[in-house]
Length: 239
Image 1 (tube, rainbow, N blue to C red):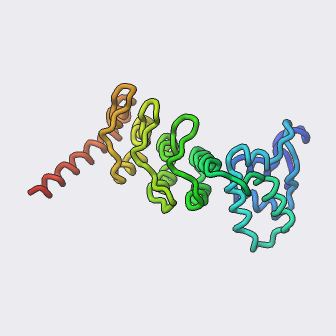
Image 2 (cartoon, rainbow, N blue to C red):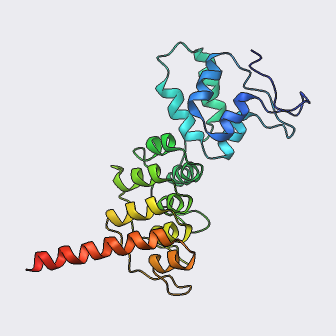
Image 3 (cartoon, rainbow, N blue to C red):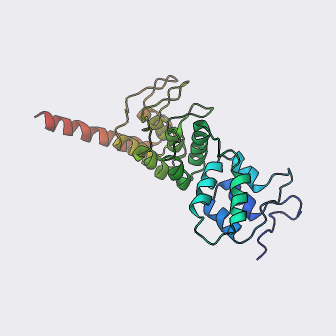
C-alpha cells in the first residue's frame, strides 16, 4: 500500500490520505496514519501540509487531545511529538474563544467525537460565530441530532441556553430546526422544554409557523399533537 499516494495525477499537487484526514478532522485516521509512518510534511499545490489544514479547520485542539490520549499505543514518540507541536501550534496558549470556534466547526461538520472532547475542556456552547449562531443553532440547522442531544445534556461548565436567539433575526435553535424541516431535532428541543412561542423579528413567526411556511407538514402535525397532549395533561393536573 502506498501510504503517501496523492489524490490527483500530479505528485506535486495532490493531497495525501493524511492531508485529507486532517482537513476533515478524522482523528483516529490521523493517528493510524502517523503510526503507519506516513510523511506528515507533504504539501498541496498551495504549499500547505495536512497539519496546516487541521489548524485552519479548527481541529487543532481535537487533534491534540487525540495525540495525548494515545501515547500508550506503540507510536513513534518523536513523530507524535512532531504532530502535536506542528499541527497544534496554538494549543499551549489557546484562549476560550479558540476552543469555542473549534466547537462550532466540529458541530457544523458533524463531528460528535470532537464535540465530546471539547465540551468538558471549556468550550463555551453559547459562544457564537460570525453569523450570530451558537453550537445548538448550528446543530439544529444542519439536523445533526446526535450532537444536538449532546449539547442539551452536556455536563460542561456552561449550560447551553436552549432559547438563545440569533441577534439580528431572533431565530432560536427551534426556529431553525422547524424552518429546515429537521423533525427529530425540533422534537428533541420540544422535549427539552424549549419555548415554542418565541417569535422571529423577520415575519414574527413561531417555529410551527415556519415549518408550515416551508411545507414541512409532518413536522407541523407532530408539533400540534404534542401541544394538545401537553394541554390535556395540564387540565388533568388542574382537576
